[in-house]
Image 1 (cartoon, one colour):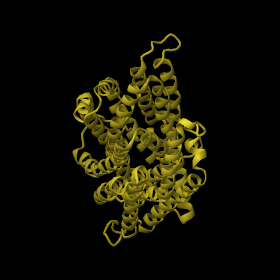
Image 2 (cartoon, helix red, strand yellow; image 1 turned 120 degrees about the vertical axis):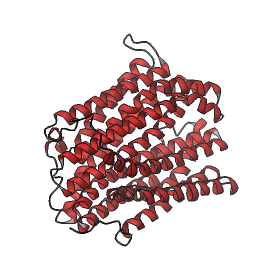
Image 3 (cartoon, helix red, strand yellow; image 1 turned 180 degrees about the horizontal axis):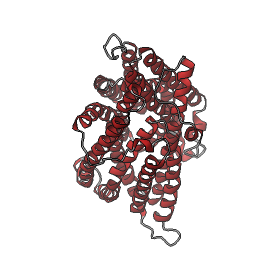
Image 4 (cartoon, rainbow, N blue to C red; image 1 turned 60 degrees about the vertical axis):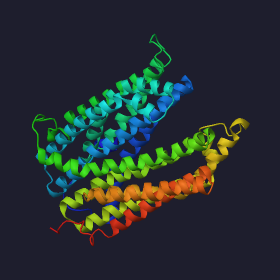
Length: 469
């Protein structure tokens, strides 16, 4: 709530010290990290209910959520490119109301256009899965699930844009409140509609999709109300002149956002591809992989939130053309994100069995091999935690410099040449199986991390900095 009561200054002179910049970063990133963790809870609630429906429906939900999330992840990166543009405008001009409104409006337009396109794609999900050789029963149930879930696409994209803009304008605390409300609403909706409680029909998998749809619409309306009525945000009149296009700004967002979207897709696809490789080894390996990956993904939400804040802080310094501030904001973010992952790596390394025990009964003899494999995978995950944090925050800092194309190329090489190639080599040719696949993930993250941090360190030599004011 303090983030709502005391908005941070958005423009003006740069922080006078690294300590001041670090404090500004933490005030911005804290609510974003909290919202990211709560969003993981929203997904977990859906899984908890659907897992009870049986193997076919659970497999259908897993496939459907993977396809939907991969697209949604990319679209949030695509439209979220408005954040560094808005931050730069605010860094250059403290009262850039018209420019902020223009960027917001065009990001929402792009969200609508791209969302409608991918709704059509998801409408053919059953046919797509059959072409990929999936079980016809699973493909049919996935199609029915996504026939409802696809209507979430535009509301989710719009909610993401509004959340991003609210954070860039100094109100990140709203993200925690809205996401916490979504968590509660999603749990209630699943309870009412999946198995049928309080007089509601038991709709099973479709009930979970309907609950997600209602939750997404509520989140979108909540953010719209915040932007319209919050005392600090309403002066931007973000919904004013909604019908007016500004093609140049739309082009700027699209050019900046398309590489971000592809980068997110490449990263998400790597972990999806790893799950596919695990499926070639065995069912137990897939289950152990899912547990270890969920733990790693939970830890990743912290540096990801810091990366979102880094984009805004570096973007403001970029707009102000203050090279000292740019360096201070970027390095403070990278050190903070990587430093946190030291803690998660240490925790995972020292107590893997305790952490796995949150997901499964580690004393159950029937799951002994699954637990043992998950612990082995977590040992590798502990080693790549630092790389995962560094690459996420370095990418966020570079986005603040509006540098997205080369980081996309780095992601393509690091994740799919170095990472996926190593996973195949170690997993199958050297017969390390699941551990070898996780070594591939570690190599991919390490390569991307080293290259992105090096690019940030050489930002001046590479001509990424603005001319000094």
